[in-house]
Image 1 (cartoon, one colour):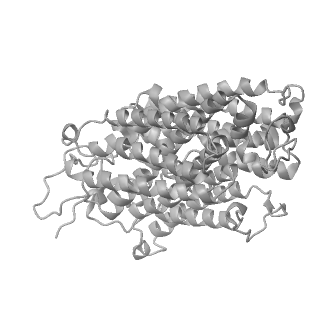
Image 2: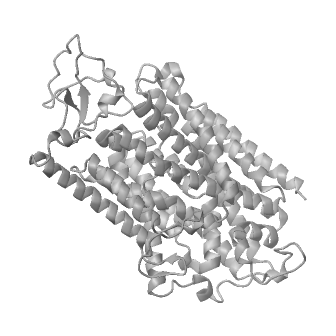
Image 3: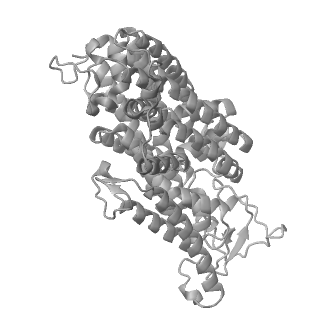
Length: 577
């Protein structure tokens, strides 16, 4: 039976978040204020006009990472394997620090709008579209995981249908993201982070004093856990590397980096948010430890609702460790506060992921690939339609896939194997080209898929060393990532040598990225923002002098010409009729 008092409390919280989101969305500048500057409307909606200060940036970055899957998954992992089995909080915290060191400053200085811009800048529009696929899957999986976490919590504490709770939560997050853009996302994150911090810390001491809860310090070795032997250590290292480096190439991360007022501020918010993620993992970790050291026979908990009590939570119910602690180890009013914390965590991540996926589609796929001449108004409309579509996809996945922590790992899996080596090479390897990118993409994808994935019932087509009972203990994800990176370098360098030495005819340079470069392209300055239409650029020749006046017969330029993948520089079309 539904708990109507609890429903009233959660509705109040939802209304609060909705009001803050609508208020924040009104901070956006009007169309009239932005119409004089090309690309300004897009930046205003997708990146809040690059006007997010460092403090707000730290809050929104931390709140985005500390989602419902972060809270529920951390408690579940600690219950199952102790501290050493709870890798994700530490892995993602290090990931934020590494992202700040490797990419934050460079990407912000270039003035990109999404993380796919450098790929389309260097390799061409279609490669950017190819990179969008794993990015879209990652953002959608992430959103589905956190919605699933909220559904589990609401169904346990309030006794309401999980399908209804997940759908309602998704609708609220999609609505204020749809209307307010990144401003709404950023400022609701500040409120949500405060709710998460207060809510979780109120619940921890309340759960500790329950009669069934034992002193967690009396057998610390029990909940610290262990990794295991050589095989288990290999798998542990593989998963940790996946979390650290697979946590970087996410638009939800770069959206915050690129919205920062300054490049140095982008770096700072990455570093501080990494520390914030560790601090915010402490309460759910303690909740997991409390649950692990509780005799559940001394509570009202009956996992099968037939009066049968158990000492420990059954394995198939451990994805609900957090809501079970709220429900059975804390007073009712405390449980409602904890429920608000989990709801806040879910919304703070769901809105960000939905906006990130929609922004990449509208900017990189629609504007730069499908309709280069699309107006800014059209791009924003497409982005809002995409917000609805991504929200629907994530909701459907949340209602059909069960394991929260497994889905959390799957979020970073494809991104780690495919996108991380691609991003590292496009930013740090000047000689990388389209051929290397395509080859690396294919190698990484194949090596990852043949390893199988039990979560989606994909069998292992190849048994790597140490394969045992359906588990790949060999670090095959990291092997696939390194193989992809090596392939990008080798194929890029060798293709350049083959074409430039004359061993391959220029006619075979079908991608036009080594020697088969059309003579109707001249370099653009390297600091061109992707938000700026080429019609507005003051074109200069490579030595800095103004370019000659265009011939009357020259075709007007478009955004496609800015992104032509014919060398390491930007190009401006001068083709004639």
